[in-house]
Length: 251
Length: 258
Image (cartoon, rainbow over all chains, first blue to last red; front, top):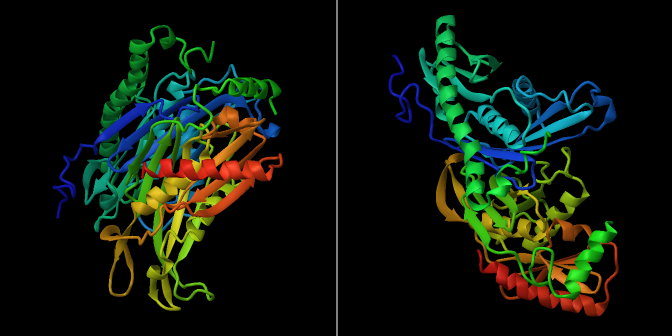
């Protein structure tokens, strides 16, 4: 039996409703919130700042360090014990690799750009939401980037390729595959791809294609949210618009 | 300690104003509480005072009661000083500052008997509900003590029991209409001493230069439920008396936001 009608009534290539905002954490150098369906991700960027412990320093260029964390009450079941578990560590690592390809930290030897991702509420797609928020936060912090990073989970439910699986779809009683991907929207290069479940090569390629298309739509939302912060500033205080927190950081 | 900042703050206080233009005993406004901020929690709230933002969530689970209280539920409060909220916070297990906040918030709720723990008993000696409160600051612009306590109480107020089946398995996806039995509205106010001055609701810069602080938790009948002195300098009996008066009055103000 083919999976034609999605559990929540969405079209096959339709994401859950998305909200995005930059500048949500005042103390950070850059920050953003990315909400997709019931998944909410906050990301804050601190740095470039001196990296400790010193043995981790790279005298050639700065590094980025990602910390992905689900708040203890954000899971769908029992309370999650605070602190990093194996899953969180792996996700932090793959997000770090995805973002690394766009940032230019050659001018910041021995430094680190810290990215903290916090999830107060989750319903599938947390790493993708985390990446979208992080890329926006990096831009908000004025870090030199060659592109944004946009991300979404695609996959298949009983051989039907769909975009942005919900938790209920991931847990669907059938053959399911879940493929979080992240792309650089301007070059279409893929910087994150993971897969679990069962899928044919044909459907995998179809899913990746769909993922690219959806990521490009997400890219527009991200870009709009980054601009919005400065538009608001421009209206109230004209002088400060260009000398905002991130604007002169890298001069 | 930053001497110049401290002198500047004291000079301003001598004139009756603070760095951000407030009066010494004035809280930042508004006190904004958004309930049900996290659907995955059984109860949650996002509290914002000034630029400080704290999210608190309550998870409920069943467990065996402690042997010394076979008819009572369990309470656990945990605060994490998340590095997302402050450039000086680091990743890793809670340090002493986070532990102190957890314990002071815990004492306020526990000792005021805010929650009727007997009503959390499912089967005497066998099974009780445990209430787990997690406090997560998103932006620390000062006064995490009071805002954590307020967010914890707001999250408790928002809590609904999840559905359970006949075997007692919890269905976290579906909530019942049943709320926690919350008898008290315990909130806390921290009064800080800088030089000869007393202030409430410190911002980050003020927190860095305080000599001493006293956190005072009260219930809606103005009973004192928990206290904690902090900071390096000693306090006199008179100062403590003044601080308690301020704390009780300010707690009443804060409670109105709930």
